[in-house]
Length: 253
Image (cartoon, rainbow, N blue to C red):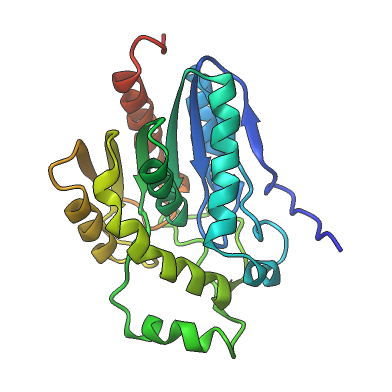
């Protein structure tokens, strides 16, 4: 039985020029958290894709039947599609989407550049050490969506946090961190000063892993975790487009 996709959670495909951008949403989130960003990049002349990651945008129980390999596979398929249509492709992501973007850059040297927002790479929370065992007996915990400072803005996300899927993400963290040194393209990271979902340790691990590389971190002072829908969103959109133009100047008018 195929679960119907929630309105607003559908994949996004915006045609543009010969420079592409692949955007990935976060865990329990949907493509709607990336849509304003995607539209800004498309208005700037880019061809943009935002895939719906497996288990997302339907019902929360579906996430417990998928894992990091499934999400990565969907991102890689979207990347390959953009490579057919574009000369240059950049990869961007929010939270777990940032984790996936980094992993893609580690494994695919064709990635021209990476932009991440509050990428998830680690946690200091003691309760998460129990996650592998807990996920076998408890299906979900309270929701993590809509961590947004801007009044009146709500993220389209699951009302629960599925634990088997989260355990899969946690298992992928050390793998992604260990291979950060293999990234050869420029990386721009946005990090919220106050984030109630992803802890500062993720930002530190990213900076450590990319030490000596073409890497820059920029702090967001007026947004929480879902910064792509928050007060600093216009800054993220504008600066990520500037980043693309700086690293693919011949292809973006």
